[in-house]
Length: 125
Image (cartoon, rainbow, N blue to C red; front, top):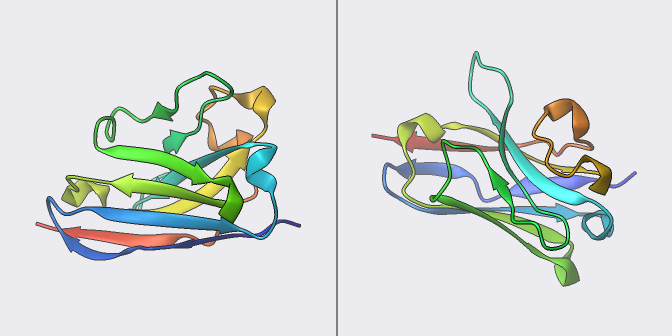
């Protein structure tokens, strides 16, 4: 089974930028749509971003739109999440995942899998 490993998290100040990486053990990103979710303590896992299919644009949660950008490097089997203008409310455990092409447009966690182990991002004010 393909494994996803996130990295790049850390402790940053409000307004800083961070780039998360997600490395896959296989070419899963070539046959599915990579995405990112996050989960803050005591809260449900929430959608952050997902790649679009073919000519479709990526989808972003309203809370991160204009600040976060999802991208990919198929040669490295890696997906990125560039996070700019970070806010304390962005503090969470960030998970990498994928969804089938047939689920393009979905932002429901149940439509995604497998999942990485997560990387923590803590934003201090």
